[in-house]
Image (cartoon, rainbow, N blue to C red):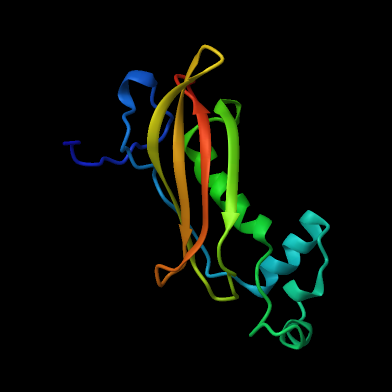
Length: 151
């Protein structure tokens, strides 16, 4: 039976100290503001009015404007790179599960799922999740990271 889960604090810990079941330090963002959405439109060059125009969003059947999926993915990426250097990231993918609306607070988390060998290098597969303030899942994903690099 596996032992209790532990949170692995920053900076990135070398290979022998990471174990399957370890929990990454979570990252909480928000509450999401209209200003953040407007800034992200410019930063991403995604000016779809559904993210900034309430009337447009409601005419499209939504209750209000909502965050770009890539903004939420960026938050998850920030959680990862708070823990490991970008150079240790082998892969990073997410599935967008539900919309994130103005006022939502998002908490990103990760758990070390397994240790693998990729091209002769030791690595870890991390299961990822982002939830809102009510525990509603907004994103799920997975990252693979090289072991043993210092931040």
